[in-house]
Length: 309
Ligand SMILES: [Zn+2]
Image (cartoon, rainbow, N blue to C red; front, side, top):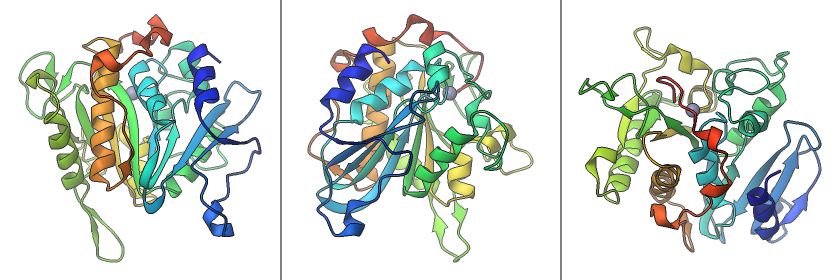
């Protein structure tokens, strides 16, 4: 455990639950809602990870923030860690800053079981060593209405080819959706595309440099012509197609400083929280100057990967 994480653990005003089970919702027991709860899983193993449940004073939607699926994208977990102390007026947050602990520790994309963002299509009894971690993530997804998966991608996504660094095969500065409209069995629709567009608009209003504006990246994953069929194993695809949740992959670019990447992800997460109708006493500051945590990131966390997000 590094110093930043130690400070985080101390700073959160929490009731620490050390069981391997899931924290029961206090409201279900008729007790007052806990403000915040921190739960450690898989303790004393390489896959140890911490889940933060933050409950608002008033009921409302629940948004799950997952990061650290790819350990070489430090912006994701550093941004997610800024939310573990947030106080909410309405709605709830579940935050898992470092889902793939061994990958984060190593500063590498892959953890013990390979690329974790390809493991969400595996069965619950798979022999893959990351199955227990993926199963935990799946249970948390079940508790949420909205799901964000934070990453850093190469260069800049654009739906049309503009340059070598700005084209459809890139991943930086985009909000990834697996489809624009998801048809529920009830006949109703999840309008994922509209939500992603609103989040992008709200984010870009706060980003003066147009080169760093976010764009919606619809991978149309289930379509047989999709250029990103590998996303069928992703956390967001599972969230939408198996659990019917509104899920976004949020990708900052690697073509900026780490502090800037954390700031861009903070802008996008704040926008997603606000668009979901969750209200906080205050959300993390959005300027890169406000990001002081980056010195804790390992330099190898910035290693480039080719056209992957
Ligand atoms: Zn990634």
